[in-house]
Image (cartoon, rainbow, N blue to C red; front, side, top):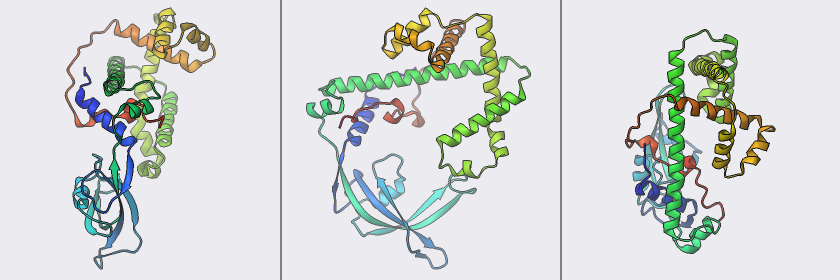
Length: 310
């Protein structure tokens, strides 16, 4: 259980401001609020001199993903300055084995990041006129982040419930169905990560072995879920239609009309109906959220769409 606090809102508000910031030419990297174009020229190990060519890369120094060593080495430099830099790669990240690259890095261009002023005109602009004060904006951001977090918790609870059912029910599952599900999972991951070098290089058998446990669990749960819905005669009922209408913010008659034309909607509503039925019959224990580095909320996850009107 997590309640979104002011620090979460502060972080997201800063993201909003950054997305609508402007860039100005600068002579020197005076602080981390700079975007710096850097040229990375690999060092020839035989001669210990930079190779011709090199690749340019733009780096926002204040981004938490920026290598702290690279950030510190770039501070206080001017255009044309250079420094030595070593970049490390873990196994599978960029090749099969862990390794390093040694570069001479040159500063090509420096831009100062200028954040917009958080005033009524700006707030009205980024929200399409729906909000005008910082208090309203912060409240709306908090609401959006809380909605995102509650959705994450709900999905996590469903995953835990599925794990419990799958673990409790051992039975033979159709190998053909597992193979088809495994292939679908592989193709879906490849489609979502077209530039992933490991996925490009890996043999089909290797990927199949990797995804097989998930495919087996998915098929086992699918068969369990179908049996529960059949035994309990679970169908899309009036409460399901009303709940879906409320979540979408539409009249329930619109949902009712869409059911006959949209198989995906009907499937989703049946799944919701199943989990509602199951959660009425299981014990769940709430535990307080403990802060972790990997769970910092951000707009790319929370789907906060401010600044689209600019």
